[in-house]
Figure 1 (spheres, rainbow, N blue to C red):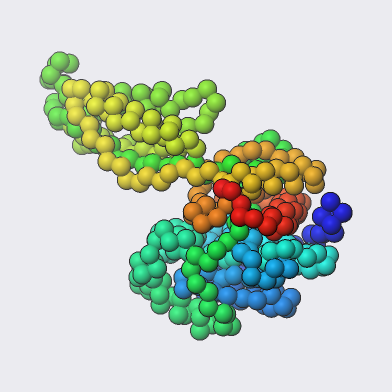
Figure 2 (figure 1 turned 90 degrees about the vertical axis):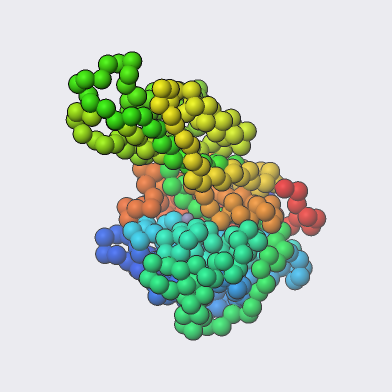
Length: 420
Ligand SMILES: [Zn+2]
């Protein structure tokens, strides 16, 4: 515990670095446009590399451009504890999403050095390539390739709207950045911890500084098409009508009912509802709607999935409904040892904490396939993110970095392999 107190986050340094990063790719409206592997993101990486080199940290980069900054441990060859996040943004992105986790990680390395604190294992900070998926698809590309969930070849050949492939964009970046030691994909890690803004309103409303992230909720998206028969609105009696809107309305009401739970956990959104042909005097022959369904519990997500299919079958009568699954991603549970470490460090530091599920996906989701992983959330004002108005106070940024420092130190002192 005495050793733990020696790690002091330098608030001025963290603020100055955050301000410097906010200037790179600034839109002039308070946010940033720093899409993956653009000049702006490369400039941001160059600045982080400068800071890392000035402290003597070793740098390495893998074939998909993920960048690793390493502070050695007593056991030089032990698998490292990894922290980090991403520097790329949405086209109208904020100054906190991603960049906060990288800066908090770097701050932890430097604070350990300032306090002359040694760790058993090396501690590394990572900048993942193309987390946002705004320029190149898919999202969380760098972490997906790193853990082997996406093939390197597939990622390298992804082409952005500007016509450039990831492979070409990586070459462009490598010409601009100082050379880094090559690093293989999927090198062993002891644990992964990502600090990130919540991107939702829960911590702020509960007046807590730290989110103990239990996992990332699963997501499914559907396209539902209800087909009836177009007919004259004035001449067709009720029993002869096959009104697609009436059937779709019934389906929507049932979906709403089945996804309404007492604890307010399930999230079901009908984001699109197109009625055709859309004239005042024709009975609608077709409705096209989308459903976005999220739940942290995979069994519950499966149950709701079956319910959606059944509702569409039963409620469509006398019309018919088809359900197409557009996207299905399983929920993720973070490792108990990381969750416990976050909870205990927040308590030790006196930062009010709350257990929370992540509504959005993150690189940490893929890292769970490689090593025990977890996340630390800090609040963001009004829950706003992917928006230039995104804001987290310096106080909260410091609290998150303090917890991160405690967590990586704690995990770095565990000798054996952690249990997921
Ligand atoms: Zn992010």
